[in-house]
Length: 251
Image (cartoon, rainbow, N blue to C red):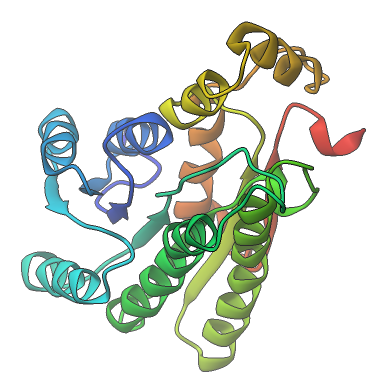
């Protein structure tokens, strides 16, 4: 039986590890043709080899890099059916602890990267239609005392997604755009955040206690939602914020 995204060309940023790798694995299992991108060329190539796709070394803050990547996809496949703007960083810092350099770095990767991905992907997607999935966070909906830049960047992704969705609908491009809002996920980024605290185990348990379902998510908990949003099953879903957080935002 054909997969849920069989034959669809899907580009994933930050594909080299964590959520991105999980997305690529599940999408490939459902029949997608994967374009794995990452700042770490070797990591992108490893995922491409595992999934039978192709790799591209991409810094999501580099507009020229985006232009080259999308041009390559167009030349090779003639279309782009899906984009997952997944690359991101996080810093556990309050407003007083956050330097301007920290702020700009976080905004550059988490928000500028999504802006550039949407802008350049739409240029290729609008000829055939497609689906854009922007990875935000529960931190794009609710605040955290020590996530000043991360909160702001992920909140920006949430509303940028809605603007992109409305623009594409008005233009009749056949492109849908939705945001996904996970809570804490077992990824290298979360591990690094926990490790940066004075007591890593205590910090981890604090995260777990915030989740009503009693555990931190895994990439396999989030990937099915991304597959759904990239599939034709979600053909009437656009401009939505899809929360998958173990109940965090229900409290």
